[in-house]
Each structure stands twice: as C-alpha cells, then as structure tokens.
Length: 137
Image (cartoon, rainbow, N blue to C red; front, side, top):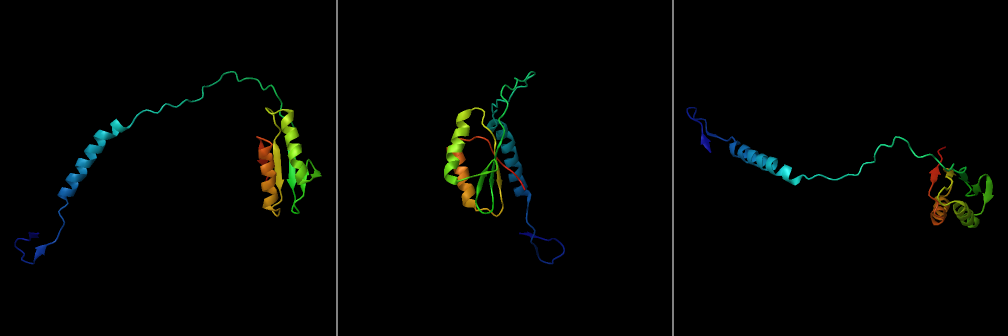
C-alpha cells in the first residue's frame, strides 16, 4: 500500500496496473512470434474456368407431379395411386434411365398427415430417386 504524502488523509487504495500491462505485452509478443509458425497453407482444389462448356446431350424428362391432399390420398400426375403401388411406379421411373431421372415434385397439403409424406419420401429413397423437390403453396 502506498501512503499519500502531505495530505495525511489516509492510505491510498489504488491498484498498480504496471505489472498487468507488462504481462499483457509479453503475452502479445509471444503470440505475435508463434502465430506465423502455427499457420500453414491449406491446399484447396478450386474448379477451373471452362471456356466451352460441354453440350447438354440429354434433355431432362418431364417432372412427376406427386400430390398429397388433406385426406392422405396420393395423386401421381393427377391420377390417384395407393401407397402400396407407389414403390413400383418409382422403381419403374428410375429403371427407365438411372442417369437422367425425372424431378419428383411433391405438392403436400398443409393439413395432410406427416406420416404419409414420410412414407412417400422413404419409398423415393428406396427407389434411389435423386431429384426431389417441394412445391410451395
């Protein structure tokens, strides 16, 4: 503790911050010296610019419109389909051309049961359908 000289009012209770500043400066110098050592380059393979893109050889097939209404009925391109027959239809579509699959557009009523949608998505995954999209209302 330091004592005030001349005033006689009592001991001075200020914190001496000089050692704290010294420690902070030493830590700053240590971090400045070690930071370049810790950094190392990361190799990233970026795509290169292509002047002439390859021509699109296949035209995509028309999308499949799959609609689920509030009652849980499934419509495949506006014709009702039972849930049990949906897997065979999806397998048939994928088997036509596995590399050029049609887009499966799902239009689900907000009041429809989520379980029906989950079963439809599971069947699409089992049929290995790659292109699935949701339509907004």
